[in-house]
Image (cartoon, rainbow, N blue to C red):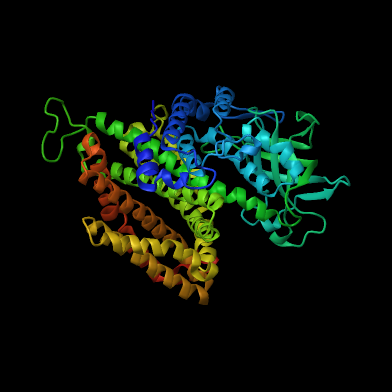
Length: 596
């Protein structure tokens, strides 16, 4: 049976020592976010995730969510777990207090996302989609819609979804055919089919609020003609209870490779009553609030599953006895040595460990920048944060999920044959993690977003938000006791700069050249971004050691060693990736389709 313990020491190190919770407390509205409050919230998250969510993870996979006559039933224990989750106030953790939210930083929501994804990814889909619906409605909904729905979403009493994909229209939303016709009373009648709708139907809440992309009768063609509508499963009564059933039906649930407890639904809208969210034909602007938040959340899915895979692989490597260490018996009192003595096993574990801790720091850094966007009094500082978050969103989504899947495979590999057996739990993490590279925009789409939109945006302004502080960090640390790490990061950073220049130069002449380089470029970006966080963490750890770390000496030494591993064993991948980018797209595009 697998196990999980929230890595609170590592989480607190990033929040308190590296990023500094005092940075949060300095923002208007967060004055009461003290280190003690943060630690209390973390303890509460850990307790619910370890004791309530994690024990349901395997049964959720084995039983799954089922559908009969349009009614979806979640696995045993999920309803009770959801009630506990809501009682703890987690759905409204960072929501507006005006609607019953706790108003805590988005940085803490990133921590919650990691823990939930580590313990029960399928469960996390339900509140995750609800929070996305809250964000879109809070930003663009009318006062009437906000008053009717937001408090219900914030408390978790009602759930939310986003309905984008249609059988013929996935990434290309401009060709959707779902229609919204005025009903004459300010509402609309929505008709069409949507697929791949996460939590589109379930038994956790008495009502579900669907945010649906559709086209009005006068819609211009393409994405400029898409509107967003709120379509509830049940039409609310005047006193806020679920009333008449709306024209929304679940006609099927997909049978999937993983995340089986999360119902992925096919929904049919038949003259369902809905209300416009935001302006007509401006639905993508509102929906992208949900999608961008969802992309960051999906990145946390890759990280969360990697963390749990690592914890279990590490424990197995310490317990499993096989063969002797290459230098001779490490445990002569035993018939064989634990496999953690073997270099190749350690290579896998260190790969996972260095990614987990570095990616966690980057994710929380992005979360803190999102708090700056919401609360910093200086418009210029808010713009800097907005630029950086926009730039790093495709990197977090794609890089975290690519490496998260690789980590889940390393974890399974550590177990050997036992990893392939269901009861040990490792094969579930491989299956569950695979979807994260696909939904909320495939990782190839994320790479194209990075090179096609983010690189040239605002004459390179978004890039400068990352490049300038990274350059300054390398220069600062090149003069001291971490100069070897700074030089290693500098080499990777130079590859990123070279790749940027090549893509911008070639891509202007031939868009296929930018497309051919996109995935490798995003990978380099992720390697360097995590490397920059490792250099920051190594600086803090080194200073702690120099000041006398006492009982935490081993903890801080581990940080420095793991930083060196990332810089010397993982970051050098950037050199080979740069060679691929420099080779250009000729061999990718040369063959005619019939020649494949």
